[in-house]
Length: 398
Ligand SMILES: Nc1ncnc2c1ncn2[C@@H]1O[C@H](COP(=O)(O)OP(=O)(O)O)[C@@H](O)[C@H]1O
Ligand SMILES: [Mg+2]
Image (cartoon, rainbow, N blue to C red):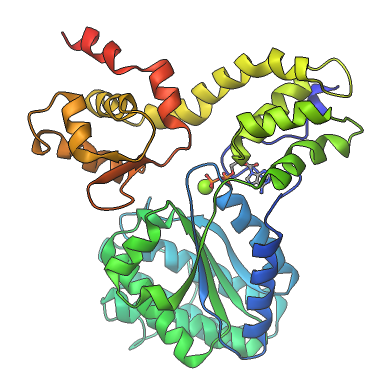
């Protein structure tokens, strides 16, 4: 099997050849587009889940569906890297307008709307300069109040979309990065959109605590959006994710071999891709056998340790790494914060709360409920116990 023909795609946001187990989500989105196009109303969609379950690639597929339906889209945009979320929204808005003007004869209407984008961007205190060759509108989206201005901006996009007979789609990734005021502004803006039944939608994704974050920003967020959790694939979907890419290139799996990979990957798409990649590279011939699986097991584990797990672990400071090791030493998640503090060797929880909060901030752990903690990376506890046991920190520290 030729390495360069390897069809597998382990990695963040790498589109797999077969998006397994997500047909229901795609149909649901298709229905949303149709309803909005008919002037109806549909709630925007929020996807949440652990790292590596396929949130980003689902957004990418949804992007394709929307484009095929003639909608303008922002492309999948990661939020949170800018100091002010409005910078990202201003860019997204300008992009949507350009797309709509390219396809439809609405130059003048789009120019006016670009003036609104410009006004919006100029009202951001940190100051952004979008290269927009228009005069800023006045009295719209320029109050400096993010809630009001974002509402104006998104309504403007909606009006243009309606005028062109299409729709506009915001695709937002890593949404858990946004702080409460930013999330609140987004809620308010989409609330306004829903009242006017404009053909604008948002599909957003983030870590598991995204829904709670939205609801604490605006209590009505629970009714405003439709929430979906993405998790591990069913056995059947996981099997498809593994065997279908190879099958299109004439390579098969022995039944038992596929079963083993699905089990060891625990249905997590990232792990399936990693296994597929290594099996393709190492197996001598088709069909791939149980012996092949055994032969690559260590390579897969090493590769995951370096890429998937290691990159997250490296984001933590020394003390935070020790805290992570302390969590893992307690067994499998979820963990009680109180137990974590004890395992860490702190006298009380106050001593470690700074590490806990920082790790939450970095998106490495999250709190499923008050006083509880879990990793955002699946099977992270096993990786930590294997590679960074708590005892290794004691050696270093003493
Ligand atoms: N439904 C799926 N079927 C097969 N592979 C998938 C699927 N979803 C994701 N993947 C693969 O899993 C990995 C992680 O996907 P990604 O979208 O980056 O996850 P997330 O954004 O949730 O962290 C990628 O290697 C991708 O190719
Ligand atoms: Mg992602």
